[in-house]
Length: 57
Image 1 (tube, rainbow, N blue to C red):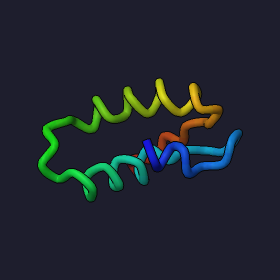
Image 2 (cartoon, rainbow, N blue to C red):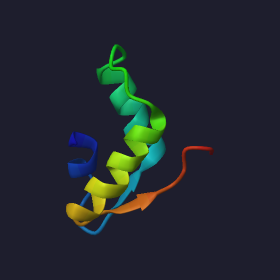
Image 3 (cartoon, rainbow, N blue to C red):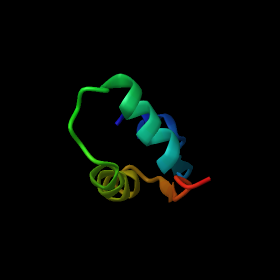
């Protein structure tokens, strides 16, 4: 959630950066990238942010 909130209101949240931050903070968490992407897609707009689907870059 911190990565999403760190983007300015109206800004863009990077899927790639958000997944990397989650993996760094909680490498033991058993959540798939697909689950994380679903969360990002739902949460970012709720906080006034857009989503950049850049995970394959």
